[in-house]
Image (cartoon, rainbow, N blue to C red; front, side, top):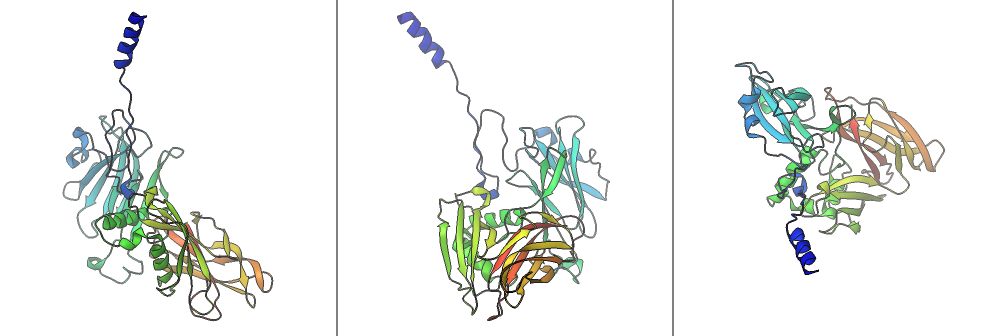
Length: 381
């Protein structure tokens, strides 16, 4: 028995447990990771293999043109949902517009890496890997409300897009960010998180403050900056979600319910993002949240009619600029009723999908600002 016990203890002490690495999102920065003893999927930018990390390695693979284009950056990450690394390679053009082309390759250590994604002609473009393992891009929309009529030296990059791997398609496809405010896109949200981490814009860490800022934004509701705000649930430093009400203090004003989530669920200093705005007696049934829409878009739902009129529907683009709107009337007299209206819009960006919002404004016969509203995130084509 003593011999058997000795052998058992010896075998147990020689066994090394397998550990799995954990990753923290850092509120979307993807920079905080812990060591791991086994290969796994990390979030955000990962170290590239030594042999492929220099821009010069990729010049003949793209290929670039001497004096015209050059590889500007190479970053790596787990972009296809496996432990293998992919490379995000950006190519910059000389000349006006500082055009950027974006490529993603897999099998990056093989003699012939495989291209799985390409996006070209981004005016004053930029690209990076997000803390969500997607590719984020920035570029100038030359015809947007802040760039139209300006010379190229005064342009501001204002259009941000996100692309994530799809197994069914075999490439990265455009996707939308759940948030509507203070950020409409993940690119902006991760930049905002970095600013907050440096001690700036601390109001983005307070759910009630984010809801109040949204209600006061002139592009959205234009309510008083002192609108009464109440936390119904969540919203604490340890919470990943919150529900907040905001009351329009103007004559005829009503109340909205604002749903918020922490960026990437991070309760360790993650900023709050508004993901839904609702109001009693109002709804948008079509389109649904994060649907992709084309012009004209049919907007249907419910509302309260006064003298047959419910209010107005507007479609906002990536700058919260209204690019289409239509009056909304009920199908049956006054009071609670349904509606369906077609909204024609004209997008300033014609190179693909952008992120936007559909808003149903409730008519306010006693004041200039809308009595209440329902907001829905959509992808605008």
